[in-house]
Amino acid sequence: MSTPDRVSELRTQIDGINTQLLELLNKRASLASEIGKIQASLGSQIYDPVREGEMLTSLEMVNKGPFSNETIKTLFKEIFKATLALEEKQASSKMLVNRKPDQKDTAIVLQDGTQIGGGTFQVIAGACAIESYDQMDAVGELLNEFGIKIMRGMAWKPRTSPYEFQGLGEPGLKIARQVADKYGMQITCEIMDQSQIPMMSDYVDIFWVGARNMQNSFLLRALGKIPQPIILKRGFGNNIKEWLSSAEYIISGGNTNVIFMERGIRTFETETRNTLDISAVPVLKTQSHLPVIVDISHSAGRRDIAVPLARVAKASGADGMMVEVHPNPPVAMSDAKQQLYFDQFRAVMKALKNLHIDTEPETV
Ligand code: PEP
Ligand code: MN
Image (cartoon, rainbow, N blue to C red; front, side, top):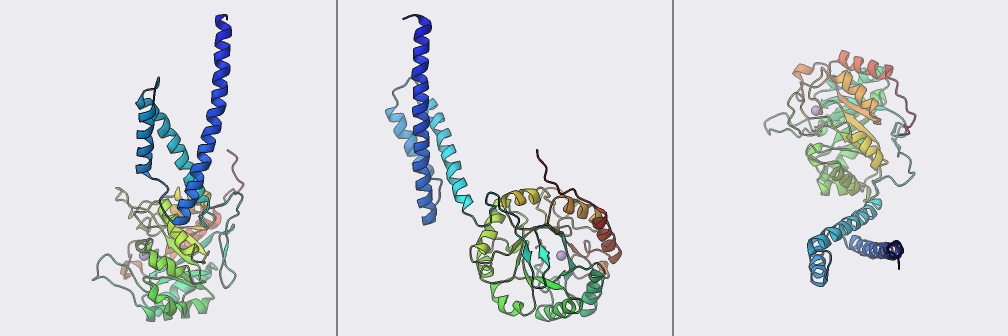
């Protein structure tokens, strides 16, 4: 046989082996995926490093070359990696929080018909903490100027120091309800513990989980059993995957009305209280079907940059923005540095009104 004929014959054999390898790789992937499904149903971990180690050792023992054991290990580790990625994808597609292929944005409709998500840009605004009837009434009147439908007012403040103002408690909620009813608004308030659910349900339309409680699985599970929508803030040290898992705790209990709120994360930067992770908005929008709101107050910790941050929030594709406002910010009992003066709030609302976003989907 001539040399070119021999090369061509060997190449034909290699083509055949490639096809066999392909079939075997896919057969292997199907088996691994079946194991993944069983493990998921048992609630056990997909990744098993001990089993991987055992497989590599067995391969080394039977390897006759010409590939060295190191090369074999490298090749098989790639196969293990690809298999794990497949199993993880399979597991995450089951998560209710994740967007299924072609799934539209979920719009959450409040009792008064106000919609969060699904093309609206809702401004949630109000006091950091409920301090008095007059303070809440003044804020309510301001929000009403702009037709705002969701007012915040916190009755418990998770302060860093136990010696700081801790909130008015239930008497504060009574005030918030009274003011919200006066102006035809929905009220949202942070819940600290699941034992508060029955009492708070008398006053509150939207429950709110603060950054410090994002991973309180007992609280999240309890909120999964109630009909009211839940605002779920991001923990300041939590990544998006953990945040999505926290939402899953609520949704898997039956309450699908979850709204994400990005509030900035801890970084080395000290010019702002936290660092607003604006890329979290499009990332969440890609991965999940649930609405996303941007908190421009706690992310910045300062009021002088509220206008540009509000613009950024709207331009990011978020479903709304949250901001704190107070009749006399310097004497506010909490977050005095970041609550907006009424005129600053008006400037924010004007900036949002004048900002026009092209909502045509990009095709890149
Ligand atoms: C708040 O929004 O009232 C608050 C306390 O913020 P965070 O939980 O994000 O710190
Ligand atoms: Mn605050």
